[in-house]
Length: 148
Image (cartoon, rainbow, N blue to C red; front, top):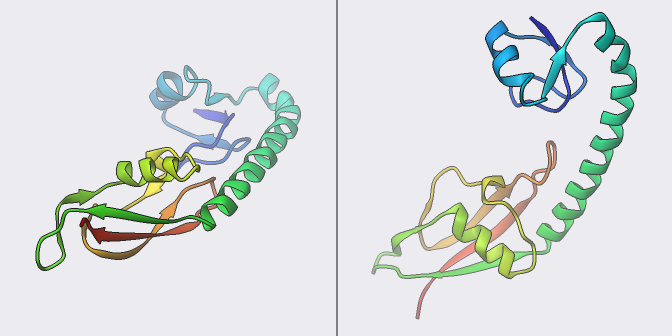
């Protein structure tokens, strides 16, 4: 089945794209969640108007993502944690801990936007990527120090 995407769907396409998907995926997931509409004649004609709306929304989201990226670029976090003799942490620093520290620093970020492949389990300095928008992924520096 062919559908017109109304919003970006990861690993499928961007808003406004006409893509071919499995019938069940389109009928049971994309269309009920209003992420897509069937690609019929009426919807294809309405696509031009929708593209203008989608482009305006994309520009606005990109602008907010760039402003968030600028605010994040100025942030450097220092997280205290209990550690053993060799610098190994008792526990780990996760994306949730980083999100709480960012919120305390005045830059609230959803923890799911923090791209941390594995929890931090050692003392040291780390670069952590944060997904601010679709193409905007700034890095912040996170320093994990031993609690005194």
